[in-house]
Length: 145
Image 1 (tube, helix red, strand yellow):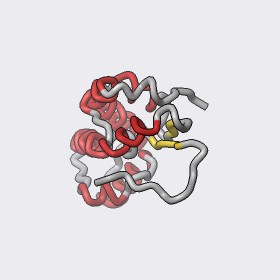
Image 2: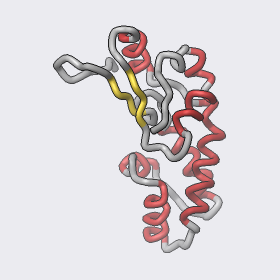
Image 3: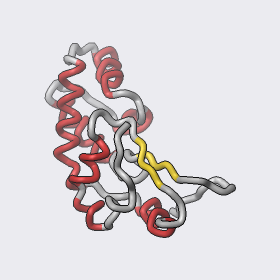
Image 4: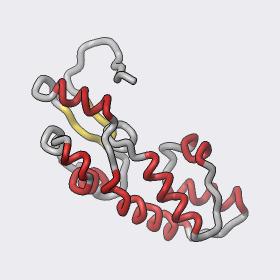
C-alpha cells in the first residue's frame, strides 16, 4: 500500500502517533485481551477495531454493560495502559508513513499529535527499538502542550 495524500500544497504535516506513525493497534489489542482476561471479559477483535479512538474508560464501561460485569473502570484502564507500555519494545512504524517522512524531511515541517494519556509520545519515542533503529526520533520534534 502506498501512502496517498490529498491534493494540494501543505505548509506542514501533522502525524497522529497511534496507528499512523506507529502500527500500535495490534499491541493495543493484545493489552486489552490480557487486561480483560483478568476479569473473564471477552473483547472481539472486530469490535475492538470498530471502537478505535473510543476513550479507554468508555470502552470498559460499555463492556461492563454488554457483559453484565462490574469491572472497576479506572483500575482496568490503568492495567490496560500498563500492559500496552510493556509491549512498546515490539512497536513498529507504518512503512509507508516512514517512507514519506524520510522523503520529506528537511523540506516541510513535521509534528506529532496524540490523544494519548500522559507521556504516550515520549514513551513511544524512547522505548521503541524499531523507531530508534529507523532514526525517526530526531526527525520529529517532541514537545508537549
